[in-house]
Structure formats: structure tokens, C-alpha cells
Length: 355
Image (tube, rainbow, N blue to C red):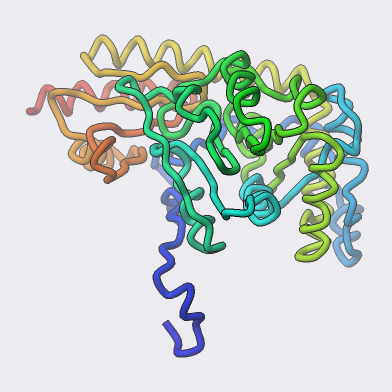
């Protein structure tokens, strides 16, 4: 690092994204929870030559048309919504804006690995709450947490979800703490907490169009909560990056959120593929955690997580391996197309037979 780099940040360990091969080619890429299907047809039509020509102009800093479309979709008011450059930006804004007086952020010990990075970067104290023996988030462990709570639901990388009733219990036992529910994967089978935002002023729900709406490359996240929380987040946004969504992403997001039929068909297709894949892996004697996301977390007593990850790579199949000692026996597998999942199952049979 240079001699000019801040001394306070010299120990910072950046977030490590999933591998993005430069040339996908024959690779079956099941490591970053991307949607295997294209965006809604209206998205393609919206990216016309006229829209490309308009890139010489700044986008609407309010992204008001997109916010209105999101609000209509969820049955809430536009002043209860804000958008960001992916949900990661909104998480960063929220960590910065809603630190309590003690600068404490509370989150599951095994969860999205961006949370501790944000804490380190902003000099916040991250308190990690353990999961139970079945890798579940336990609501009672968060009672009177003493800081802003952040929970991915369904959790990543496990895929296990809390019910809406369990989220309600966390809110009820933390009246003085903000509770952020990161719903990046909620559309594949879990219960959203959005319906609770009018009831709880200490709830902020963050979603993304990267997964269920096939717009990971568009970088569109959105936060939903009471109007005061949203105003706070906008205060941070307009102090940092007013034009945080480009014109093409705004147009793409509007079309993606409006096409409910396509959204429901694709999420149902992925959920069905997941269930078939889970059954196939169980027949191969894999342990598969119960997932309500677009990925599964699996392990085998016959091969280590790292060896399985490396063996699949020889078949041009990429999955995600985590070296954390508590989950090192597992790999996370994104749900792709039925053909892609069959190829992985066939490769797994060969890998196990060769041992």
C-alpha cells in the first residue's frame, strides 16, 4: 500500500466477491447466485437507441419513476422507498447512518461476509451472534441486542429462512434498536418482512434486483421502511452520490418490477429446479440444509468441501467454497438451469465413484 493510505484502514480486509471468470465458455457457473435466465422481455425493449443516446444526460437523482413502480408493486408509498447502486450500497448507507451511540452492529456469526468489512471500514464494533447446531438464526439470541441488527433472510450461505413471525419477535424485543432485514434471496420461497414496515418504525427491509429479476449487472437495490428512515438514508445518499443509479438501470428496473408474471414464472422455475436438485443430492448421501433461496448449502461425509470444490472445477463447474472452519465441509451451489444441475449431479457421481 502507498505511504498516503490512511493508518486507520491499513488492517482493512476487503470483501472477496465470488470468482467472475473472464471467459465463461464451457464453464457452468454456479458460484455467485446469479439468475440463469434473462431479464424480463420489457427490459430488453426498454434499452433502445433513444435510451443509449440519453446517456449524455445525467439520470434523475430521485429515480422517481422507478421508486413509484416499486412502491406500487409492494403496496406502499413512494416516500417509503429509496434505491441504490445494488443492495450493498444501501447496506453501507444504513451502517453509516444508523450506528447507535456505541457504534454497535449485531449480525449472525455465519452470514454475508460484507457485514464485518463494513464494520471495519466504518470503525464499528461488529458483534457476531452464533447460529444453533442446525445453522439456524435463533430470534431469542437477539433479544435486547444493544445495537443495530442486520440479518440476511434467507441467510447466506446457508439458505435457511426465518418466518415473518420470528422477525416480528426480533422487532418486538428490540424497540430501541433498528432491525435491518437483508432480503436479497427472499423471492425464492421465504416470507418478506415488507408487510411489517407500517407497524414497526424500527424495521428497514433491503432487497435487490440482482437475483430474482436477473439484473445483477444492472446494480439495482432498494430499501423499504417508514418515511423517516428513508429520509435519513437519502440524506446520506445526497451527501455522497446523488446520481447513484444510471439511466439504463432505472429503465431496466421499472420494466423488471412491472412484469409480475415473468417474475413469478422464473422464481417458481428456480424453486422447482432447486427441489429436484436437493432430492438428487440427498440420493447421493449429501447433507443439504433446507433452503428457501436460489442456492443450496451441501456437504458429504465422503469428500471434504475443498476437495469437492476442486474436483467440480475439473469438470468446468464452479461452486463457492468457504474456508471458515465452521463451514469448511460445505460448498454453496447456485441453482442454475435443469441441464446445468444435471451436469453437476452427473459429475458428482463420477467424483464419488472415483474415490
